[in-house]
Amino acid sequence: MEQGSAREQARPTYASVASATAPAAVRVPEQPRGEQACGAETRREQGGTDQARGEHTHSEPPARRVAVQRHSVRGQILDALRAALVDGQLVPGQVYSAPALGARFGVSATPVREAMQQLAIEGAVEVVPNRGFRVSQRGPHELAELAEVRALIEVPVMLRLARTVPPARWCALRPLADATVTAAAVGDRASYAESDRAFHGAVLALCGNEQLVMVADDLHRRSQWPLGNNPVSRRADLLADAVEHTALLDALIAQDLTVVQSLVREHFTGAES
Image: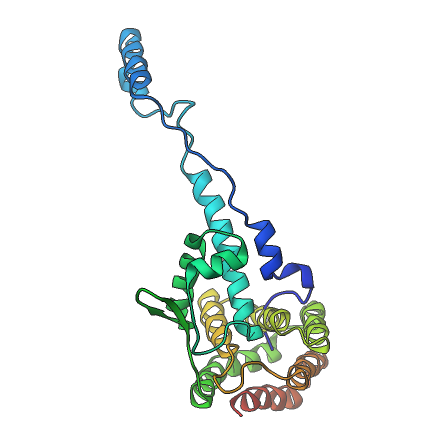
């Protein structure tokens, strides 16, 4: 049950990132030293030195604009790398260099390296000095641990919400549940991962605890990375999981607490196997 849209265009791919993130020719012009001195002298002559000291001239654009554009590229690369992890395109145990991945995406190595550093923080990859980044190899035990922690966080919250949230609020989540089914039906693992987290996040958001939602989403994302001996999830497994989303939503709308409790616990128990 997990975040995002099942729409194909919402998810960056190698091809889309190559065209959308091609580095723009962004230059931050530097004011010649002579012009700076001339401007300062003019201000002194006008008696406005103290006022001009804190001002930007027209030739000094704020650095924020450049930072935003760079972050946009890094964000798209990060999304594409996460999708590649879920799809099994980045194989557990393999080492990938930033320049090679940059060429694959049609961007420089810098945004790839920055995105990989974020993935290293999340535990998806390991830094290999002078070589690049190795995709982490995970086993069933780690996946079971993640499922157990997620259950400890999400199950009590969902059961509490089932008793307090009116049916109309649950009905509003129907498109998110349907999106997981759509992605699972076509075997789009990356889109399924996004829509799965979106559904879970929307459910937990009803409790009003933003910190809980962020922690749960991080755990959820980690649980979606493929195992070392089983790179990708089978379509049948995705469909079974997606059907649980719709069944749970039906039970929540009907306020059938017995069924809700059974489905919620079964969902996380199944994630451990």
